[in-house]
Length: 366
Image (cartoon, rainbow, N blue to C red):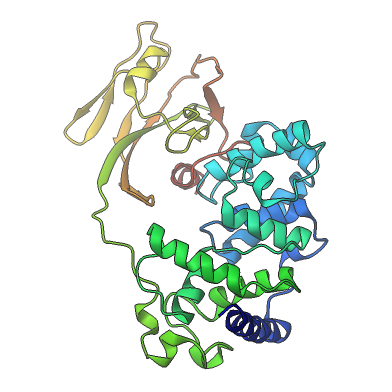
């Protein structure tokens, strides 16, 4: 049986590597001037994000943080700024924390074993395997979303890969098929196959080097694999965001808590009581518009309207954002505190801002 597995795995890897040599992607930014640091950054960015989306972010991020030392010494706001729009912001925070640990514990050198890599924030088994294989040429398997799809179809593994028993089966196949030679190329090749040919919808089976032995293809059941995640009704949440604009055209932003949605990013205030506490305003809804009273010192007044609802979808819920616009008629005397910032929308951002918030601010510029 072991010999049979060896023969099968060699046939698989040989076919995949031959395809990769002729059709694989070899000019991606992180494949140039390759280093463990660049591989690590790219693998984190590619978690749940497509290559075409990652490319411009990777280039800007590497230009600003060319090595682990520069990343570790940067301010969190700066790191989040260069991640703004890429989503799943905990990845950026974990990168920052990991960089600091690498400098403190490993003399600025990325660890080269899967076990040690997995001890760093934000690095799981598959990501650690990819870094070890691509950066250090170690014999380690990976199982990201693309690989799960390829192996589920090739071996006709039913069930949702998020289920532990299904994932364990796929891990067994991943480890069996991963060759000891050219492991870096193989790792890139199997990810490329899933991303370019063995896609979720409309896969290019006629061009696939695995079609002759792919059980799903032979059974004409490619669309059935991998199994779909059980359907779940996505709840809808709503919030009001207060767009307070001063006479200079600056927008008031508030730093979000270190945990939760958009952790540590700058956002629009959502609690009118906090604005009142700053001496800004007390807001009340009246016939579809917002009325605002002067503060006791009569320093300013604002007149607001309810804007169009903006829907933002997270992985686990929809969020309907109802913007309330206010314009300060005389210069506000609010002093910037650690959690508050007057942001100039006409200038390039230097802080991390949540994507839907940036969209609302960009509309002001337009």
